[in-house]
Image (cartoon, rainbow, N blue to C red; front, side):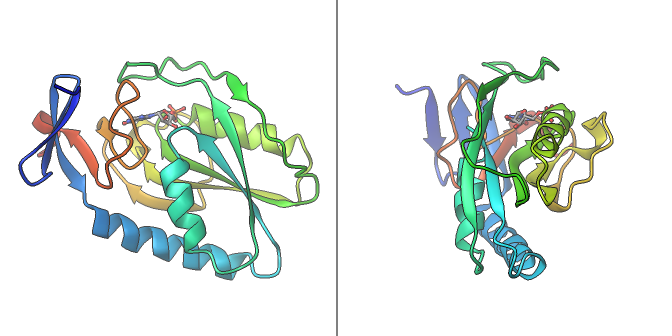
Length: 192
Ligand code: IMP
């Protein structure tokens, strides 16, 4: 049996032996991502922004977000160290893949799947600023605002969520569950 199993109507999945339940469904995600894309298209009209996706988690959000952007834009990727198979952050950020794009003088949007403690996003904003871009803003699909320890300005936020562990739509648990189009939380946390 695979380590990730869809049960019944996909309202529930089992990942690495733990049960998760749908928290934000695919329609709601797509609706919100489309709104964000529209907003970015308005805000950056004539500016040809460079979207920097944070691997691995942001790949799905970034792909859908870009499809909703109707102005010229470019894309590149950066990769930071991940949680491994843990559900809590180590608090230490390492860069595993650097950006290739020349961003000096460009309008940069850093695209994350989720901001938790905020350490990764804060690191990224500083890192991007060191290249002297014309501007840098942050977009994240999810924001665990109660868990965020640092002061960061998140211009585009899909959903503010409670401090819960979530998977699906790019987000993983032990590298699994990224492929699901919905976002799930641990079953016992559904009513939290
Ligand atoms: P931060 O540096 O604590 O804000 O963590 C950001 C990164 O941690 C995200 O890009 C995710 O890769 C990972 N992360 C944080 N919360 C979750 C979660 O609930 N599920 C899966 N990954 C998470």
